[in-house]
Amino acid sequence: MRYPGEVWYLPREARDEGDTKGRRHVLLTPCREAGDEATLAYASTQATDARRGGAHVRIDPARTRYGAAGLTGFNRPTFVYPCRLISAVSEDMDRMVGRLIDEMAEVRSALADALGLRTGTCDGSGAAAGSWRGRVVRVTDGVAEEAGFLYGVVVTEPRYSRRRRYQLLIPLLNEDEFEHDALDVRVADPAVALLGAEWTTALIATRLIQTAFHKHEINAWTELVVSETIMTEIDDALRSLFAL
Image (cartoon, rainbow, N blue to C red; front, side, top):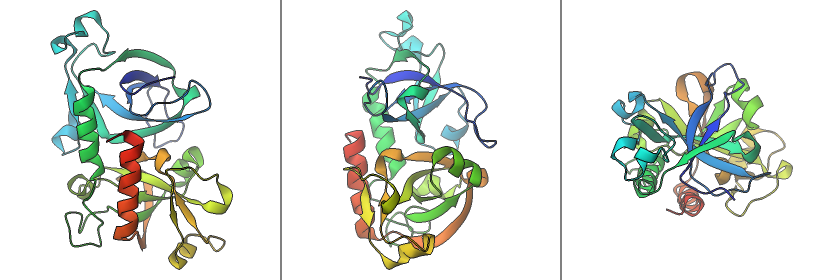
């Protein structure tokens, strides 16, 4: 088994819009060593998204009680960004280079902030009003080909969502074509038919949550926004997935 806090290298992304380098990521969900899906948080020495309001934790290995031994997997101050999540299969996790221990409570707190739990949707009257949270968007063909989905529900916390930087998306899948998972949220709504003539029920595939760069990887927005009731179900599923 692989466990939250482990620091793994992931290979470069294949699509044109993707990251061109293999980079360190922090594992956020437990997974088997083969044939399993995992969610990881992006890590970078650059403070770009921290300055722009993205949820983050700064890890200085020299200031951890075990960093001197090189056990964190980082060799200089690094930002862990729960506002930028990657969904990966076990086989794509190249090699483990370290592990965060004491810092994981802070990482989980930042993750809860990044997800905007209980802030509602863009159509509501709460904190998410006017953001993109809860809206169904369409990704570019490059993302769709690599990730296996065309539509996703935005779950980014409202303030960062409005900046149109990196949006956290949960894939929206045709129930007739995919195996149901315990954390999926089912949407049986006539409006779902707008996504495809054959759709009757959609699955909001919580375990496949990932990030799309708004400017280059989101192709269009739809008029569909999930209801506040569905958004609450999504939030509950995210809490379960990440043990928040």
